[in-house]
Amino acid sequence: MKTAVSNKQFRFYLKIGLGYLLLWLFVDLVSETHTFFPRAANETWKAVYLVAVNYLFFEFVLPRLSRKKILLSFILGASSLISSSTYEAVSKCFLFVRQSSAIK
Image (spheres, rainbow, N blue to C red):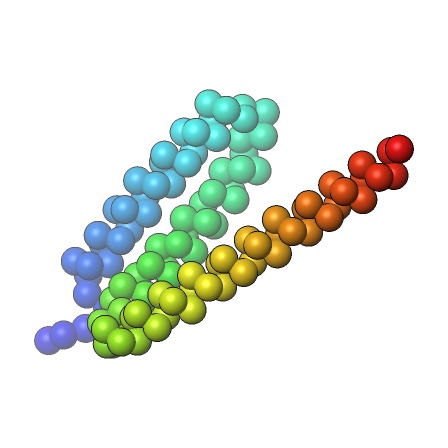
């Protein structure tokens, strides 16, 4: 009997998520000891979200995509990242120019 959620696969994603959560918590404990507990709550939610998104993507979305759709998705995603990073770089450049001209 096949279930919608395979226990073996789901346990694998939980173990990976727990490993990343422990790593993130250790880094926060070492680097920011005075704000550890708020950061721990934030890291826990981040790990839960990432495990859920990764599970859904790798188990349901990716197997249903063809090579052509994967390539198209990659191109659209890359162009979106490039355009957003270019926008941020240009806006920071104009902000720097505006601030430096106001100083003079």
